[in-house]
Image (cartoon, rainbow over all chains, first blue to last red; front, top):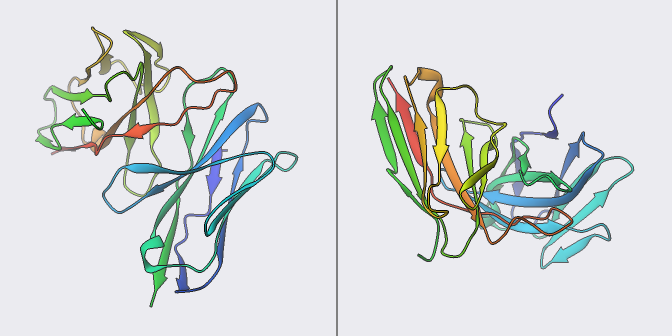
Length: 110
Length: 118
């Protein structure tokens, strides 16, 4: 079983739609969680950290469920520019390497 | 520099050849990471440096892969006797420190070096 699992998609949604991605992780010792965004043939860039209480940044909301070991990302009012691959990232306390999921591809159409 | 710089951006080589990929991290970032990304996959951890030392090299696939960071800044990833399966984008990232007690690290990635082994 992979340490971090994501549905690869693609998720095809129209502009203005709300879309949600989930990610599950296997290491119960995981303490830090992130969503990174990766555009085609570009490097990953931090989208947002995920906090235990949940957090929101504009149209983006991230949630963490420790009991079920999953993380979610909600995008409201999708824009064409949101089309990208969204990578779920997990790391454990005292371990410096970040473990990436395979990514979920989002395509927003006019 | 302002960002993480990687060279070359593209490298095409023949099976069996030796390859070096270079990473120049953000000035002042003590932690440096190498990841490998194959098509349709997420980045796969290779090695992490804290300063000059390799703090975790558990992701290096075999002894053909080696990385150094002699002065705690620029790092070189070295691949001997390249194989077609080594073809991938090699990503370097740096972060300001070894991470907070909670283990949180925010990485800034370079644009990557795309390696193609024929």
